[in-house]
Length: 238
Ligand code: NI
Ligand code: MN
Image (cartoon, rainbow, N blue to C red):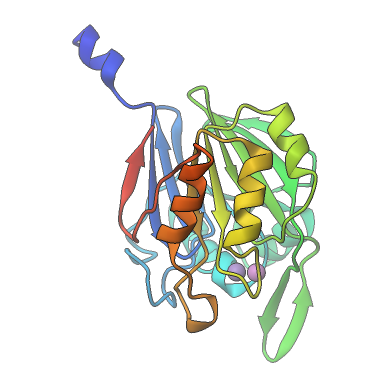
């Protein structure tokens, strides 16, 4: 291999597949976040198109758990989630690796730590609501890059703690409002997290979460925080 080329090769590619679904590929492996694809009006790919070594699912809501069980079965890969959601996925026939808030684990594809998220977590099944514990966010470190995927959450002060404890390269933050942080709170989150780059998510999929990501980006740029807006299907290399 050409040494110069190897040096220049990007450590990691982050692809936005729509809503809160991201695919992260590094030399260590491939990670899929919140694979809501089949029923997602903005999905860039179908659930049958994706490859991964693991699926990280932030909570049970259908726009996050999405096609995780089907993809887990097809690729024979684990769903990494909080204990209650992992248990539910296991009962559906998926492979599951249970973790919980504050816990971390080193997988072959990278290091994962579960972070708090202010939200709910449930699955609708046959007209019944099944509670799947608490939601989470994820810190992932692979190839010496640290990603913070906030999941669905409102603003919370311990984002400051995450910013103090970790040198975050990319923070993936919801900005859609209504169910999650809106742009103003997400700007405040970015100030506390101090990442090198922010990627907005969880907006424009439905009318209820319509937002202008460019305005959000301008507000971050004014704070000298790089904001990378990805349309479904687009990627960024870091
Ligand atoms: Ni949700
Ligand atoms: Mn959601």
